[in-house]
Image (cartoon, rainbow, N blue to C red; front, side, top):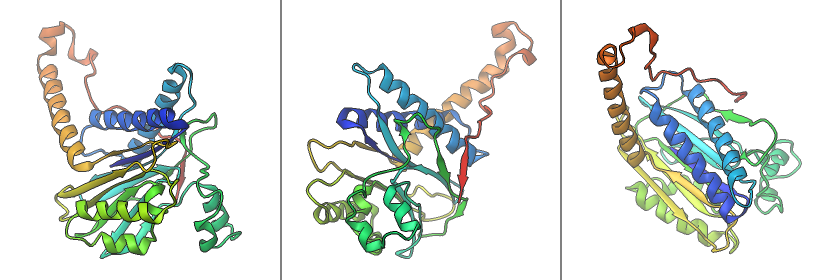
Length: 294
């Protein structure tokens, strides 16, 4: 599950967010499943996306300095791992109640944490859209926040969304609306409600959610919603939904594994080289980036 909210002008924002989603999806596709070290995978994938966004910006004519937020969640065997940069959020709701949400990398979140402003003051703070970290668009080292492994229970809902959604309604209302019979209806209603509650200049509204129906299949119900609220938006949000993407990537991954298996069986005849001279393994070592643990 991936949600990215680009910035840096409409073209730069779209370039950054789409590059991030494409890069992480490609890297996910290259890994055998289940992924043995989810946290290392998330860090490596976001770091590679960071570098890809910068390269794309430099190659653009004229050069751009694009950036994007991101929140990425990996689901395996009834457990979830996540990482994020910026103010796109991950929520975990249980029976309609929020049991977890990520902390934004934003100036307002900093003021809240330090006690300089109240939650009520944060809602309409003039710098509420100012983020302190992003993917791309920076010469500083990328800083990623990682979450600890979370065990999911039947009925749990994971929601990934941009600030266009969560700034338009309180968390209690989000949790209540996620109790709807289907996530498709819930997200559609939430996006419409957030749009009505927000000022005319509000940001894009993008969300993706998955409800765990059983530990054996966390992808049994998934949905996404996206609204672009203004024609001259300076951000372009991109979402990768788990239902469609997981199926597509799993099928392609299986095909790649089949090809590699055949190659290992016949490589001596095909390449006329000793078997130990050739490494065809898909289990690449994934470097860890600098991490912030909650």
